[in-house]
Image 1 (cartoon, rainbow, N blue to C red):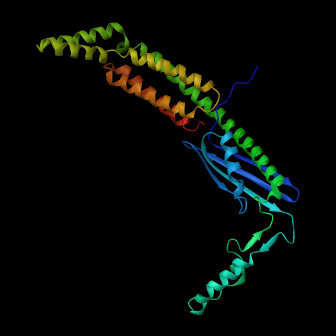
Image 2 (image 1 turned 180 degrees about the horizontal axis):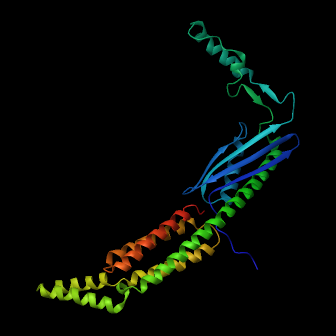
Image 3 (image 1 turned 180 degrees about the vertical axis):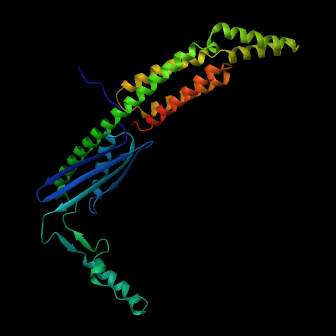
Length: 297
């Protein structure tokens, strides 16, 4: 029997290490809540050509969350691993000479010029070179390992979130059952309240067509059973979503809004103090549910 899928949180950390010939690297990722999938990549200069593959693989495995992904690469090439971009260096010296001759700025030091991006080039950082395709493939494969690590961390966090969401729904369901026993939800009490309001209308001698419209409005306002039925349906839907496979965070958030809408309507229609108090407890419980659901992928 297959194990039930677990909700995935949007919070987690993933890491993997890789090695190919004389290159070694580390992938790291940190993930937090987000309405959509937002990736911020930090990759070494010269590896920009890998970005489309990185984004594609991440989007295949992660649906939502703000991700910070970094790649750190080292080479054991020793002497000769770096080269000097003499063309750029000479251009900087030549164009800067006019400023130094004014005396307003000092002559640049060589070690300072070396810090300018592109002057000193890491020879091994050439991901666009076809000669490095085997190494690049190993790097992308290692990215998959890191994403699996991240997914496992998000799943572990998701298990704790799922337990809290289920607890909120159980508490809410108990409140929903209590609300059905209140006088304000009983058909006889609804009928009595409607008759009293109708007598008040009749005493005002209003036109017949307006009386019919007011009576219909009273009937709707007096009866909260429709809201209670929809609340029961939302409870069932919430429990199904907690057992569903795949990302359900957006659906849970939408369902939370539907819960709150029905509770607000019930409380506005209620003339029973006990029912109103239960409605307020229900709203507090569903706000806790919504807060937890905001972390679900």
